[in-house]
Image 1 (tube, rainbow, N blue to C red):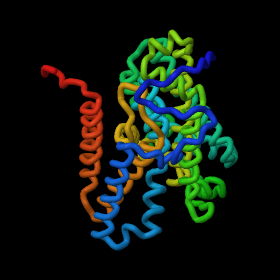
Image 2 (cartoon, rainbow, N blue to C red; image 1 turned 120 degrees about the horizontal axis):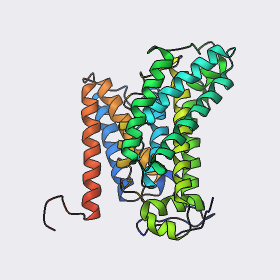
Image 3 (cartoon, rainbow, N blue to C red; image 1 turned 90 degrees about the horizontal axis):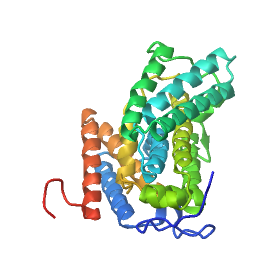
Length: 344
């Protein structure tokens, strides 16, 4: 694979390899992140005022655990959007991996490592299938992954007969993943932090990350610079499959069984919303993990607050849709692009 170092697009500021990024992952604050922090503080203050238990340590941990799976998918959604693509099938991939991990665990002599290996293997497979369809089949990413959304969900339902499969809560390792803590912090949150840091370092400190930004910013210039765009795109979709499989494994550990649909349906909308709110330009070339994590926290805090207050859960879907539209409108306004059908 050719990894010629290519300057990132003008709107993306990337530190040189090995140089410390001021503020790191979450605190390299720009206008976008400051807005998200302000919105998060406002949501926390509002629901904290309405309910004394909302800001308790126990409820904060509940929010953290609840957003872990969405956060993992939002991180890789950020990468593919920066690269100029999109993956609508991440929720179905997680559901399929969840089923596979539990079924292989049950049939393989209750070996958790075998179940997890099988889940990651299936994640790589479906990720490569998406990438190959997009790159070599020349299918639009939205259409290809929309097809994957239906297909992977259907496969998960077929192999599981539409029901939860296996039981993993008698296994210490799965229990540790789903309910364990390290230094008082749930293991699931630690996994999210590790994945986020790894992807952040890849994007900001390596030639691979620079090339990903370059492909999303201007694929023609990237190709002329010697970047093998096809291999990069397939690799990015394979990465999505791996992280979606990790999310599926955590879903299994958290619920105690493989879930073909429950727990994974709708995750793709949350992941895309978080990436867009976090500052990813849907045309590619711009975005970062810090903003995405702040958006994930905002969505989780809002969803938990609505639940604590007993507000109809259907309003959560309305809020997510409204936030996604608002994020795209803000992006369009900032880019200065004229409205469709209107004069400049």
